[in-house]
Length: 391
Image (cartoon, rainbow, N blue to C red):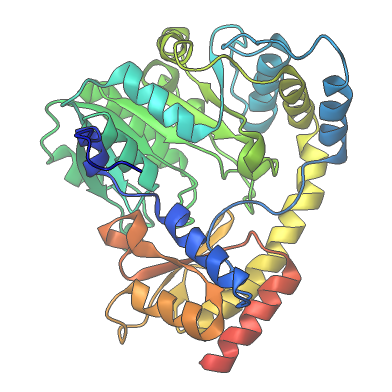
């Protein structure tokens, strides 16, 4: 390769680093190829398949000769209708499938398109700490200013509205929220949603609630769109990745008022050309089949895995809130460790088990670790035995 030319990357490349899991999983793959057999309990990629009916729908439709062309960016009516029906059944929220829903290629894509549609370079965005790293990285790439708001264990990781009111909110366009929360497992609360809607209305700020975990180990799924007036100032993302075991399928959705949806579609239509029609039809089938399949295949399995994760957390000396929901377990590390990575690297290098250091989610995560429930019971039991051998 000729490195003598003067081509340089865009300045924005210096604002972010490679996604932690992208970098770390390459290391794990290399070490496994050398015979180490590391068990990963880090990333939240469901290992269970979608329902058999979902897979069969994809195969059946893909065999047809007339299903392989470009598709409308707004999604096919069958999928939008299924999404609207699912929101009504799950949350009691009524959405117009023709104008208040936008299918997405996953929530990460939705973060990009929503930021492009609502925030100019230099605008501020409120980002939770701890929180999903992509809220920060994509905002930086797009030239927005990050204003972190603190989530604290003593407040059940709900926003501190008194502190928010004392923050300089000039120039803030978007506030990212995520309930049930990742990484902390804090559940959604109607009171929090009510306060968020009031906060948005008072300060003319768009609330974007990322809601992919509400069906995982959660007895009462909630949506911010259940609150009166929320649709006028809020967007909600949902995703099939976690709730329907379809992370690689890349199907999510955005729900809001018709004007907001149209603005996002204007951006999205200039970036992609829609999703494969058989995949959309299969996703629609999965939405219609959710209640029975989810109760059997998700809640029971994740409950068993959660019990093992709790034993791992206790073995490594961490404390945790047993009321957490979602597909992770979040725990506070013992004081004897300088930071969370000291503990996670110890567990990785001595036990061959990869768990997530909380620092990747923000400064407030530096004393925490996260265990994923996305490994089968046998692997999780083996991880527990390995950890017991070194502690």
